Image 1 (cartoon, rainbow, N blue to C red):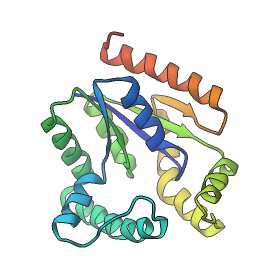
Image 2 (cartoon, rainbow, N blue to C red; image 1 turned 60 degrees about the vertical axis):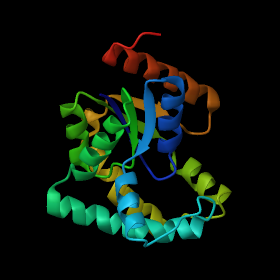
Image 3 (tube, rainbow, N blue to C red; image 1 turned 180 degrees about the vertical axis):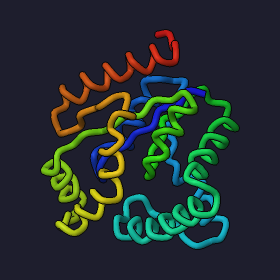
Image 4 (cartoon, helix red, strand yellow; image 1 turned 90 degrees about the vertical axis):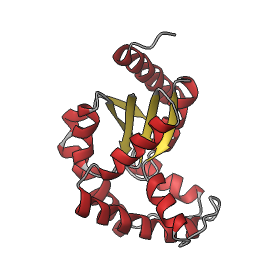
Length: 193
């Protein structure tokens, strides 16, 4: 299976880049690694989520984070990655563009599976604007918390990032980086077209 994983700061555009890759590469689907956790919580009837309700999404993220951490602690850092890949394989797809990976260990796991890691770059100013567009305020505390939990672990392992896509609000720059990433992905996995 062809595997691409996106990483970056909150609201950097990881999901957007993964969706664009899957839209432009028919062999791929975009797959959030939180999906097995959501299915588990859904089976336990602990939540319903309205994707347009930001407050509800934040309330749902807390148990997802707790279950995610418990899974890592009990079964190892690759548990949700492994379950996501198993689920994607069961759908018969050739490739998957993963989002939602949170541990630096996952970078190495993606390479062990022969995949590529993509860093989605966005400035703090752009991230603040994206928060504001959703009616949210990015406080210093929240930004620092996100930095410590999502960005700093990957900055230390930046050498494990295979590609960088700038998604800083400049559409031409993002498109150019995306086209370059697509070329590298096709070459890496020997995809024609």
